[in-house]
Length: 105
Image (cartoon, rainbow, N blue to C red; front, top):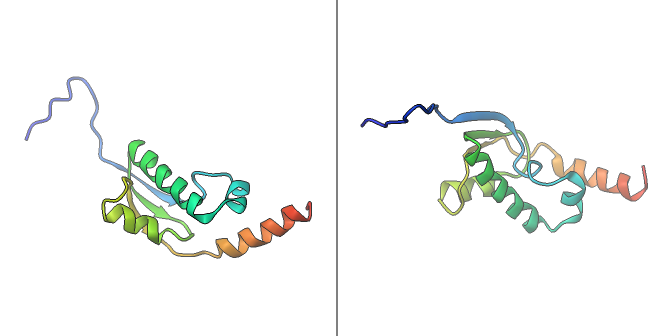
């Protein structure tokens, strides 16, 4: 197959090896105050934007990205291939941050 790019550049997809599916789309304060379903929907929208920026593969560097990976793999949403590294304790850190914000620290 021949693809005529007519003066344009064609390149392979890029790989982001340090990506956070949940933190890439919303500020931490919004994540702490939002329903987790909303956070996951925002993550799915960010996954599509990440794919459109040319990243065809990402390694999630910590957090609950398994459902997002499953949705991408099943073709339910558009996004890059996701290699999740699992929960890095982000929920514990978020819990601690939430109490720090509440205490005004």
